[in-house]
Length: 507
Image (tube, rainbow, N blue to C red):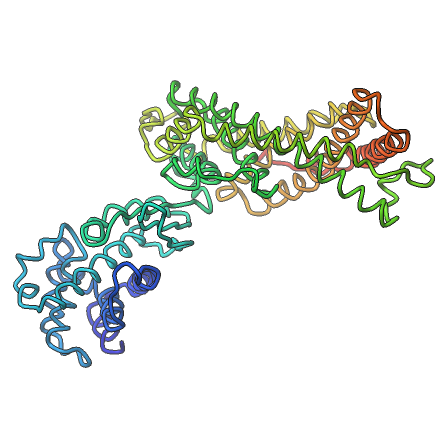
């Protein structure tokens, strides 16, 4: 490829973009060999064509595909036969705009097999070029697979992955004509917010960033095939967090979104959060009971989880575990059923449409004297969230579980906000707040989970009068141990609040 690179250098080709397109093109070629059945030589032509596709850009921006064709025909490319040079010229010509191959004399002069190779290679390169439509080289291909309906699905991620994936899908017209359906899906790895970005656009980007965590594919029918019962607990937790962040986005930026779709999104998110919370709660309860049982069986119950007056541990709370297993299955079934309802599918489609369309936001002109950019409002919003945390310093030294849970919620909201906007905050400031949030959430969360475990265990005891004495003692022992954890974690709460009290964002 030395001659190809030399030609690119001569004509001032952006090699970062060219190499990125080549990398994407080769990845698609290799992953779809079973579909296109092209040769190794076709793969080499694809790489060369990808590197050369913008070779005419400096000469004629508007018609650089035509200029590129002419440059390649006139260039002495060693290692390529005359027919291959014509194929390369056609590949470069066909990378842009609609393809009308029969009107190109170079293409018509090729043999049938050469024409077939040229079109398939051009089809792949068009898609690959779309995957760097942003010219940022930040969109990564996470997966290339063939779906059950025979479509090619390309999953990507990166700060510009939605735009690049949409461009790839638009440029897949030739692939669809030759091979079959193609879908490209982007997933944001960051919100991509800038201080001078209009607040309406930033609000939609943040919502899109969080929505990506729960939407596996633009084709929402994929929800129906999910075996929710087999989902690992972290997946349910991640989905629940994403829905919570979406609900917060809709609250914080309510003034930026159109009222009717925002209302429908908030309503659907609330319903989804409810079934997710039930499933997540049962995952947590069951995990804590199982961990405690294993610790008791190995006589390794940590001192922090053992009541001060505990003697020999009674039987493990197996009856409680069996009951929580049944409740967990029921919660997972409810979640699975909910994800397949028409209402939820409509909600997912509405969410996908809203985050992809600027019309979801209210139309606001930039007016002097009216806050309209991110930098105008982010400091005020950050102050509001931080003050909400600081306001809890009036609680007593031993707050109730309800009060501690309330602190946990405002800390969580602060963390979600800073995480979404940390690209435009001072790195030191964002780091200090996030570190404080993580430490507080870890302790407050442990206290909340332990309190819930103790409460639910005692509720089980109260509801079943037929429990064997040793089983009853085991469950009570578990509940006492969980309450001991609550006491231990609660004792730290004021120390964990201190970092927030010392964070100054007044400037």
